[in-house]
Structure formats: C-alpha cells, structure tokens
Length: 129
Image (cartoon, one colour):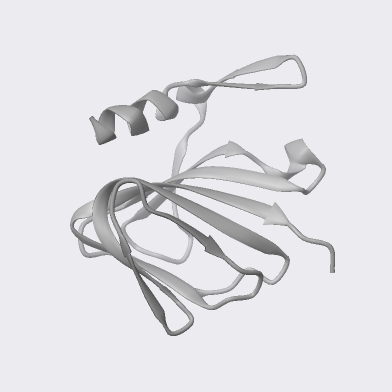
C-alpha cells in the first residue's frame, strides 16, 4: 500500500495558479552528489517565487544522502515507504512509513536507507535571512 501512495503522487496531478501539471511527465533525475539517490521535482522554487520546493525522493537500498545543510530553508521529510535512519545533528531519527521530520535551517543532516530502500517527500520552505 505505501508504494501505491508513492506511485499515486509520482503519476498524479499538481494544481497551481489555475494550471494542471501532469506529474507523470516530470522526469526522475539522479542526485548530482549522491549515488543511488533520485529526485523528481514536483514543484520548483521558481514556480513559488523562491518560497517552496517539493520533491519525491528515492534512495536505493543501503545508499544515502550524505551529510549536508540547507542554509536558507527548513526541510520537511515525510516517509512513505522503506526503512532507514536520518541523522540530524547528533540525533538519530528512525525512518519508516508515517515518520515525519522537520530539519531546521542549516542543521547538518543525512539520510541512510536500509535494506528496502526509502521513498519520501522532501519539502523545502525558504526562510528570511
């Protein structure tokens, strides 16, 4: 069922400012820095005056989004399927379906997938400096 939910969003519809965007037409792209990680941009910052970006994220089994920071935004993860771990600073947050995590601006974090891999939504909300 969890993968069904991910697939519904992967092939769903986004409505914004009177437009209907077919998400099935949005491509998956390998992450530029992390092997085994793919992103599907559902909503780019350019579409929201730099305020919000939303992505579907696939992390293959035993792969990771390595340690990094977002100095201009907070990040919200919503785990749809799989198992793993998110390290936020010194805190270890177990990731599984239904888990949500808010990552503060500029907080060092990384996401590690377990044997099943991970599927999640990642949302970035820009904050004033």
